[in-house]
Amino acid sequence: MATVYEKLPVPGYSQGPTYTDTEILYSYAGFTQKGVTLAGGQGILPAGTVLGRKTSDKKYYVYNNGASTGVEVARGVLRRDVDTGAAGAADQLANIVIAGILKLGAVSGADSAALTDLGAVTDSVRGTFKF
Image (cartoon, rainbow, N blue to C red):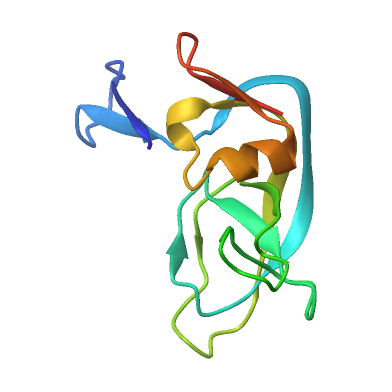
């Protein structure tokens, strides 16, 4: 979930009183990301979506613990919003975080199995998701 902040007044800038922070990183300490291919036709995937990799085509899809195609294993967390389009759309390139400290509220789709797959630990007091 993106955080909305009040803007600091800047002379000559008049585009509304707030901005939205879509950054999912809580810290750059131990941060690692990699480029991947997202399968087309999944619609808009928000930053923080947990992803799995299908074994047959090696493309990344939204993590689904109930599947048996490889996407049941969480591989990382999407770094930025990506529009993969409707059915039949072209594949998209994106970055996923494979290690680091993320904002807990920004991560979506992480069940207990995904936490185990990623070796993640959550801290609700600090609001962090560390893996």
